[in-house]
Length: 501
Image 1 (tube, rainbow, N blue to C red):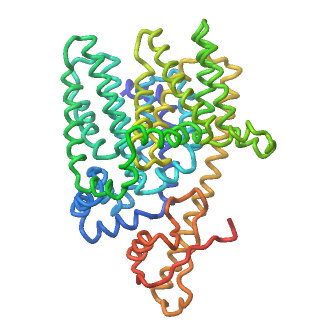
Image 2: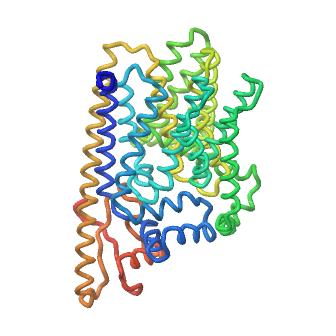
Image 3: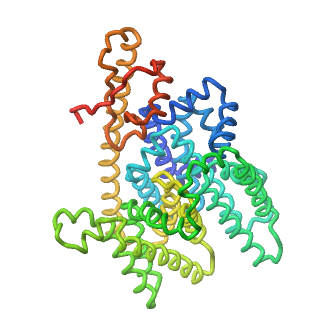
């Protein structure tokens, strides 16, 4: 008992922040309404059942079978989803700490929370506060971190006799991911191949554990690739299929760089500053003068939009502020190459593979999208979290000056409080609007004959709920919304902006 108490005392910072992260996500999850595809999935699950509906979509729309089953299950159990959504991120937080083993637990905890709260609005509303998004993208994120953690620990500690629980967790994730979300599955498969190659180079034989993991990936991919629904969906994108391999890469490259780097301003700011200090402290030769200017210029680029209004006639600043300009496309490609070289060089000098695995996942989660017909903010949540974990590991290895440490933590804490308060107020408004909508719809159910001009419903605040408001031309989601609320399909519904926001 005393050993347990002592262990808890050692980890009290991580425990406290785990509870804070859970409380934060549970609070906003409880205020999150069904929106967009949520209505359609709920209707399908109610009418056809969980498995019938999931397999129906596998045969008619997409190959993500495990995600489809999870989606149809959780959409019918809202309270369970709230707990699952809130648990995912403290688990990622703890798993990150298990890998990194931070000596500076307070720095690790505060910066992790800061990155989560200040994440790009679009990613938050498409993954954190959208039931469909949290299941489609959030659950694969969690499973990828579980897979990564298990395999990273086995690899770095050179564990020969793998415990049964590690087998179960790793193989379960390896099977789920290709049937969950493609880009993170490709990243984890690449990581598996990396581990297999490293094991063969060191031991001159195959690893049973990593090889069986590879087999599970292959089987799962075979199920995904043989989905009739995936073929049907691709057939609806003839323009994409007509592009050559090079054409697809050139078409998607600016989007991938834009979403991965340019839009993640706080992450790039912290990562670049940290790497500048890291290179200054760890390198004594010309290498630091190669990397530091690249990181310094990246900070200028991501915050250039803040200044373009002050100097609108400065052509260079306009190019810097345009995330799709040639300057940005070329620079962020250089930034990515510099980041990869920087990490590999440090691991080689260290004589151990520490940071490279994080970068493998982050890079391939984005690079795989070069061949994807669909790119969006939510698909970047994987690169964001793995770059964040790498950043947190590097931060823990810096030589911290006490006079710098506490002011930095104070500023970070103030940003957490300010951003957290703003978001809490925003989602309180979301909850209030949801209640107002429900009241209007309940009134309509009783007095429908008095709604001569249609049903007028208030919109949600911008950057709060993905797909919560429906435009007139969006017939699919309008039909799903009406079915979910038992409204006649010929009824008119208008979503309007309230003056209060």
